[in-house]
Length: 119
Image 1 (tube, rainbow, N blue to C red):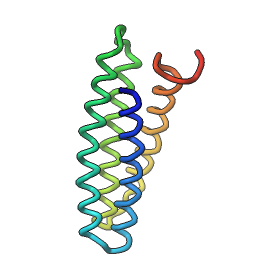
Image 2 (tube, one colour):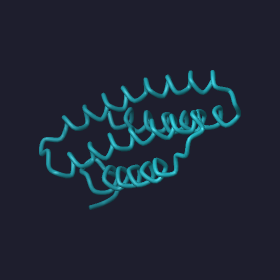
Image 3 (cartoon, one colour):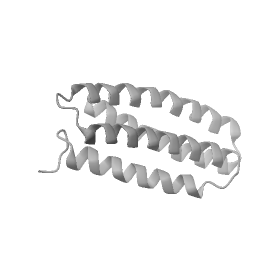
Image 4 (cartoon, one colour):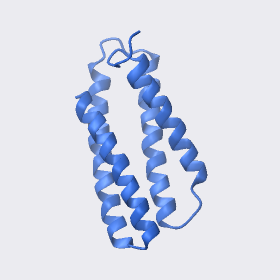
């Protein structure tokens, strides 16, 4: 399930780049279609993340924090896409996205039991 979760995040970030590119190029229809596909991937992220959350035998505070930071990152991605498509300033949402994504990566790959970094 971890592979599905990571793949979903990577595809979502790639689609965010496409939404930004289409919006800045003035292709609103392509941006909207790509944004809707990105929203469908949110469901896949939530499903795989929920499955990973349920797979932990010892649900500690770090698992809950990771879940909340992941939700924060999804919200920031959505707000960046919306603000850019409406040609509004999105710098605060970009900052939040970078902070949330960095925390999620550190928790997911480094600290938590399914991570790849040695303890």
